[in-house]
Amino acid sequence: MGKTLKRIGLSLLHKKYLWTILAFVAIVGFLDPNSFWHRHQICTQNDELRDEIATYRTQYNNDTRELRELERNPEAVERVARVNLYMKTADEDVYVIENENSTPDNP
Image 1: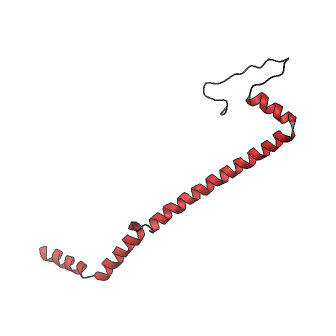
Image 2: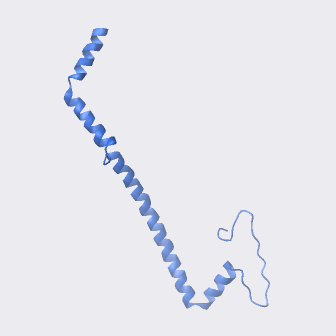
Image 3: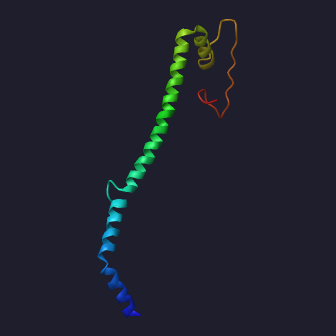
């Protein structure tokens, strides 16, 4: 049993090309700062950031459209004042009902 283990160990030690290839794969695949694993993580993070940019771009377009509407339409200004700022005219009463679970920004 001891001789067979020794023979297997020696045969593995003599396969220098195998060990060289395994070391190369380990270094290039995982240990190097430019490894395939690191590149995969960066690509994943890049995709997430692109999605976030698309979300912010959509939000920017919506806000820009609403701002243009507020600049051109006095009824839109009145609507925003009534809904967001709880303003009223002189001859009306406004009752604000808030849920415990929601905030004014998040109904």
